[in-house]
Structures are given as structure tokens and as C-alpha cells.
Image (cartoon, rainbow, N blue to C red; front, side):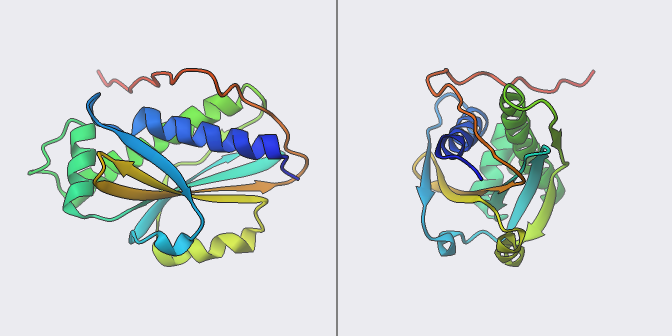
Length: 184
């Protein structure tokens, strides 16, 4: 069973993580809105990451297509040349964004749950999304993410519960910088 405050907390952590990590510059705007109809999700593929504990498993799904505006945004976000980026570099940039988002969520969940593990990101086709229901999740929320009032992406948050899941996060906390991985 997932309490109402836990559902709100999962939503808050997810939205905060996306807002902190999806923009390419401080001039970018981002809006996240829950949607009721998953049929709105039109992207061809999605990236899945899981955060697991003895009490729950969170599945974060970030939907994407390889259209010019999406490729350009994630190239810019990763400081890559949008004109020269190939499919492999785009996927790496998108996977990095997804990984950072879930790492942020895991870090925040660790304040409430001690034993957490996180998967590596993997890519699935849109048709696989319908199989989420076979996991019998206790909570599913779909989102529309709009960047700069033009680029629209979607995400799905799914929580499977294995016991009582009840926690509350401080929703008044400011968005924190998650940092970047630096290679030497």
C-alpha cells in the first residue's frame, strides 16, 4: 500500500529532478504537467531506470523520439554540436540525462529508505509500455514535459509496492544542483 503522502512525495521528487536536470541553459523554461491519458504519449521509444528497495520499486520512463528538436536540445544540454551529433551520441546524451534524474531521486529517497539500488538505463520500444500493468503497480503517473513552450516530451512514473510505503518529503526545499561527472 502506498499512502497519499508517499504518492505526492514521489511526484515531487520526480518533478524536482526533471526540472533541475532537463534544461540546457538558464534561459530555458520547463513545465511539467500530469496527464490522464497515456495515449497522448507519441514518442517512439523510452528509457527505463529502476530504483529498488525491499518495500518498493520505482520505474522512471523517459519517452523520446529522434526528431530534430529533441536531438538539438539534448546536444545543447550536453555541450555537443547539434549539427554533427549522430544517433549514438544523442542516445548517450539522453541516457545521461535520465541517469542523472534517477540518481537525484535515489539520493532524496535515501533520506527515508536505507537500502536502495538503481539500475542502468535501458531503451525499449513504445509498445512495451503497455506491459507496465502486468507488474500490478500501486501508483502510475504520466507527465507532459514542455521545454521553451515548443519541445514536448513525456515521462511515466510507476511505483510497485511490496509493503507499506509511507514517507513525506519537504516540498519547500529549493532545487539543488546535482553536479556533473567530470572526467580527467
